[in-house]
Structures are given as structure tokens and as C-alpha cells.
Length: 405
Length: 212
Image (cartoon, helix red, strand yellow):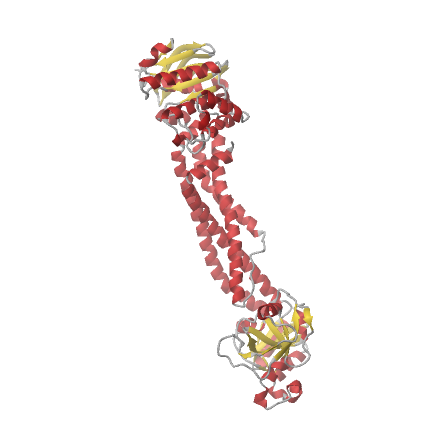
């Protein structure tokens, strides 16, 4: 027999109200947990995917679209840029390194990205099997692509024109890719794409240029007709940030986009939605607090004789106050723990949905220290809700209460 | 054992109790008689230490109640005084056993389920330990209330109108039960009542006059 057994007895005696209160609080806490986990993981992944890339050069259009399409492989590109113009940027004195990207085809919804070996090195991806591509139409699969499609080294597949994986796309049946390597999971965007040589995408569309020898496409195709989708740029000097984007935007028909700036802008936009959801969650938590308060306050009326009897049995007023506070805290603790478990489950569920859509991955199997603050917040709400009832319990006038009946 | 001197109590300036002197020895049994409104419950509450009188002194088991700090008084009451109220007031959300353990817990005594079972057995309630109050008949509930009052072996057992709602047969049963339990722990018994049926059963009377 202690405060916990007494509190549990009372909570069991009005289980309906107890369940409602715990659920309200759990839903609020779960929503906040989901938001915390999802945004922190998204932010971390987006930052990781954009690390070391100072500038992306693409066709004229929305800078955000350029970033989304060429770093995160989420949106469609703004168009193509000429290979020669890209070469000029690569040779610019403020540029340390560039990685070309050629997009346009997909395999079962996974993008086929024509690039250099530098791209793999940039993301620190390692080969799990085979080797990197040596010739056009050699393909290296990201780990997730390999796992989903079941393709292994030596297998061949056909690219579909376009980026979506929509039905009815034109298939490049005559130019199948051959898998030469599979990458180990890296936790970056590389997991979700098919990598190949830039020339592969020229090769697949070689018919337009009447070129038969696709292995030598890079030599045979006139430079003027070579195209890229985007160029990832690393600066040689911080000064470049002030010069290069303006130089590109003014002197070419290309568009320069800064990943840092555009992702910040993106998070500002997402942030509004997140804030709305968070506000909603806080309303839930507040409602839970109010509900606990009302439950305890009503209980106080039902229990005024109980409280008086406890005083006659020797309980001090402080003990009765603790009893009420304990009950509020118990509700809050159960609600918070349940909410956090629920939040992780929901995040994992969201992760499944995003994986189905071949979008960024999110997992419920990670813990944030901020969740501890959620527990603290819930306990504070429980304490606040119990404060006035606890005070009234403290002030119980034993003799007057018992004399009344 | 208890000693009351020049005790006066007033609510909002209206005097509800005025006792010149009353004392009783350890183990004696008393009826506190008087019509409704004569201050029986008030005097009982003062003896129980849940009400401090406006003036005068009350001591129980050699302890001047007015000299105790609030927390000390709470503990003193829990350990030395047992109180059976007219409306019993068992805690509905706790089992019979836990209602008894509650008395040990709040009195600051070690929790002793064996003693609680013993108290229940002596009141013929051994099989009701895990029952909840709503599952009990009134007679059983009253016996649980008595068991809860005596579980800590109090020196003073107080009962407020324990028989007023009972028929004649049950009235005597209830009275005998209280007397037997008080005797078992050598407690002084004070029953506040206006029930004329039990006047003859206990020789020591203390009469309260209706206040003007």
C-alpha cells in the first residue's frame, strides 16, 4: 500500500476517463515525436546528400527544381545544358571540381544517372560486388535498387524513357544495360539510383545521330551535340560564391543554384506545414492537460469523504496533495511513454510509405534526445493539471466534511 | 486516559460546544449522549484530533492534543485513535484488505497484512479480504469500518452514531462488536449517540445539553 496503489485504484475505478486522458496526451506526444523524427532525419539526409556541393548548374528555370532534380533526384530537371558550356564552367579558375550529370531514363522508377566515377567517390559509396562502369551501357546499381529489382552483376535490363516509372513509357529495348557492379548501402541518395557513364545516355539516344558504334559514342558524337542535365560544382575558393553564380547566370543560358540556399528555402516552406502540425499537436497536449485537470477536479468532489477519511487515518495534508499530484504525473507519464512509442511506430509506417514511393527514407528505429524533453513537457502538463486539485485536497477540512455526512 | 477541561467550540461566532470537564480511564466504555445539535460530533472530532477547539484543553493517552504540531497530531491520530463514522466511508476503489492496509500506511506504521487479516477474522470477515466495498452488505461494511478503526490497536476508539440506522437486532450486534473490539485491544470506547436503545447497555454516560 502506497501512493501508487491508491492512485492506481482510483484510475482503475474510472477507467474510461483514464483511457481518454492517456490517449489524448499520447496522440499529442506521438504527433510531436513523428514531426521531430521525420524532420530531423529529412534535414540530416538532405544535408548529407548536398554536402560538398557548392553549386549546381542546370538549364534555365527554377533553382529549387534544379537542386531537387540533380541532388535529391526528386523533381524533373529544368532541361539540358550544352556539354561545351559545362566544360567552360569546369575550367573556370574558381572551380575546384565538377561532376557531370545526365538524366533522362529510368529503370522501374529508379533513375538512371549518367556521371563520372567521382560521383561515387563524392558520396563515399563502396562496391559490394563487381566494379564501376568502364564503357557506355555498363550500369552500377545502388543498394536499394539492387534489393528491389533483384538484379545482380551480369544481369541486363532495359531503360525506360523519362524519369517517372509511369506506364506506357518508351522502352529503349535495343540498348539494354548490363549490370557490372552493385554498391553497398551508404545511407545517401546513391542507394536509390542506377549509375552509369554519361555517354550511356547519349548512346541510348544515338539513333537520333545515326551512330551505330555505341561503344565509341563519346568520340563519334560531335561536341556541339553533347548534352548534360546538370553540373555539380565544388568551389576552389570561398570567393567563388560571390562571382561564379552571377557569371553563369549572366553569361550563359544556364542557371546556377546553391544547394545550401535552396534547401534552407525548402525547409522554410516545409516548416510552415510542420509548424501547423506542431501547433495542432500542442493543442492536443493542452486539451489532454485540461481533460486531466477536469477529471481530477471532478474526482475531488467524489472523493472529498475519501480524503477526509485518509486524514482521520493519519494522512497529513501534504500527503493528500502528493496523492493528487502523483495521479496527474502517473497519467502524464503513461501518456508520454505511449505517445513516444506510437510516434516511433507512425514514423516507421511513414518510412514504409516513403520507401514505396522511392523517396527519402525515414525510420522509427532512432532515438532523439529531444524526446526526453517531450517526457518532461508531458510531466509538466500533468503536474500543472493536478496542481489546483492537489491544493484543494491539501485544504480539505476534515471535521467539516465528516460533519456534513 | 482522556481528559477534557473547559472545552468550548464555536463556528462563526456561534457556540456549539461547552464542556466543563470530562475524563475517563483507559479501557472504560462510554456513551456520549445528547440531542441532535448538542455538539456530539464536534466533541468526538476534538477527541479524535481532527478539530482544534476554540478554547480549553483536551488530552488523550496523556498527550495534550493542543501541544502537538499539525503533522504530529496527524501521526498521533493515526496510531492512537480509531474512528468509526456513521456513514462508514470505506474507500470504494480499494479492496477491503487495502482499506485496512491504508490505515497502517497513513499512520506511518509498518504494513502488516497478517494483523489486517487477524482484525478481519475477528469480525468474521476473513473471506471478504479481496472484496470491494460495493460488494458488501451494510452489516459487512460496518464491520470493515470497525476493523479499519482497530487494525492499528488504538488506545481510544470513537464511534459516531453506529446504531442509529439499524433495526433492534442489528443495533445490539453492532454495539457488542464495538465493545468486544475495544476490549480486545484494551481501548477506551466512546460512542456518540442519541439512540435510546443502547442506554442501558453501557453504564457510563456523558450527557451533552443542547446549546442555547
